[in-house]
Length: 191
Ligand SMILES: CC(C)(COP(=O)(O)OP(=O)(O)OC[C@H]1O[C@@H](n2cnc3c(N)ncnc32)[C@H](O)[C@@H]1OP(=O)(O)O)[C@@H](O)C(=O)NCCC(=O)NCCS
Image 1 (cartoon, rainbow, N blue to C red):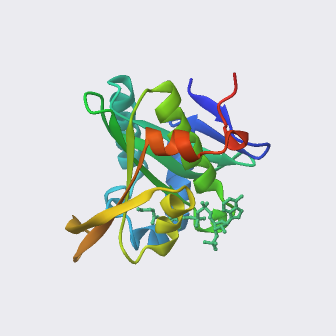
Image 2 (image 1 turned 90 degrees about the horizontal axis):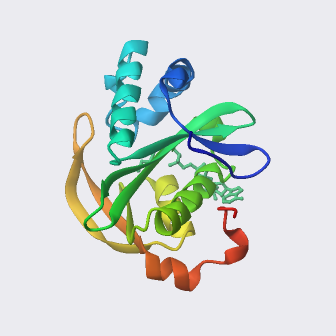
């Protein structure tokens, strides 16, 4: 079971089928807010669609293609952070995230992404992590910017968002950037 305690209130736990009800509840409570930036919200309108999604994540995990965790805050499911498109030959992966509206502003996603970066470089041996954000999604852009990702450029019309294309700003961090700049006092992987 993939499970990490990030601080006394916050833990990351791999999502399993047992989380279907809680995940669905969180989605139901946040649909309009999430829909502003996430293209898949309308495809998960029933508990069965949520279960199919979890099943797919489980298959990707078993095939070493992805790792999606629930962010648990004070024992409640607050959001999801995931490493996707793991490309082993090129040692790259992409990180994505979302959190319930009431859990914003506490640093939960920044903390979770900080952990996943460390995990990716130290435990998985990856070399490059990407995060993509829509240009106007300022809260999302705050995460790679807070974690010293480098802004590489703008991917034009990279995503269809219900009724329009949106560009993506591409951020990345390399293992060498992280090794040279991270402060070990904030490392989260324990011996
Ligand atoms: C994008 C999203 C995850 C950002 O959430 P967030 O709460 O701003 O991010 P964090 O949990 O890292 O919290 C950072 C905020 O907490 C504050 N904070 C408090 N304590 C903190 C700490 N210890 N460390 C870092 N930040 C802290 C920061 O100042 C920041 O607030 P500010 O932007 O008002 O300055 C969230 O808005 C969301 O889910 N949006 C909808 C879905 C979405 O857009 N997903 C991304 C698609 S690319």
